[in-house]
Length: 296
Image 1 (cartoon, rainbow, N blue to C red):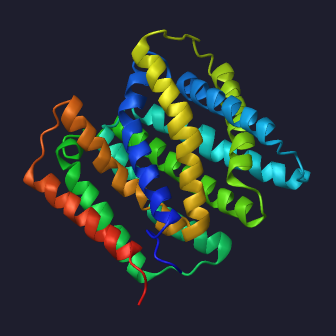
Image 2 (spheres, helix red, strand yellow):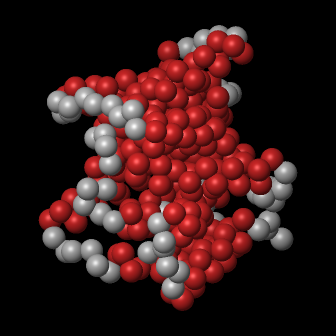
C-alpha cells in the first residue's frame, strides 16, 4: 500500500480534517435555535439538492439494479440520518468532549466491521496507534469528562452516542461495499443523502417535532457550511479516502479533527490549553504517525 499521506490521499485527509474540524462550532449554531431532527433534515435536504443537480449537470444516469439502490439507501439511513439524529440527541446529556471521545471509537469499530464484512486483517500496529490516539483524546477532553455526573441521563447519553457511532461505522462499511461494486462516491452520496433526508422527514413526523426555521445570519451561514462543505465536500473526501486506504486508516481522521475544533475554540471561545491537553495532542499525533506511516 502506498503511503497514506502521499499525493491525493494526503489532500483528501487534510481537507476532511479541516472541514469537519470546523463543523463542530457550526453544529452548535444550528441546535441552539432548531431541534436536532429538523436541523439534520435541513442539512441533508440542501446537500441532496446540490448533489442531485450536479448529477443532472454531469448527466449521470441511473444504471444500477434495485439491489445496489437498496445498499445506497442503507448507506443513507446509517450515515446521513440515524447516526446524526442520535448524536444530536446525546448532546442534550453529554459534553462535547465526551461525545468526541465516544465518536473516536469508530476507528476500532471500523477495524472490527472491516474484519466481519470484508475479512480485512486487523493489524496490531494499527490497534496500538488507535489506542494511543483515543488515550490522547481522553487527556485533551479530561477536564470535561471528569465532571460528568453518573446518573441515568448520562447513561442515556452514552448509549445514544455509542449507537450513533456504530451506525456511522456501518455507513462507512456500506460505502466501501458500494465503491467495490463500482458505484462512484459522488453518485452514491447524492442518492444516499436524498434517502437520508427522507428518513429524517419521517422521523420528525413520527416524533411530532415542531417545525421552525431561523433567518438569523449565523444560522444560515452554519447551514450553508454544513450542507455544502461538511456534507457535499467533506463526505466525498472522507468516503473516497476510505475507499483508497481502508476504513481503519481513513477513520483516524476522526481523532485529528477535534484538535482543529479546539484550535478554533481557542480563537472564538477562549479555550485555555493545559499541559495535560498538550500531552494528549502529542499522543494523538504519535498514534497518527504509527497508523499512517508506510510499512517497511
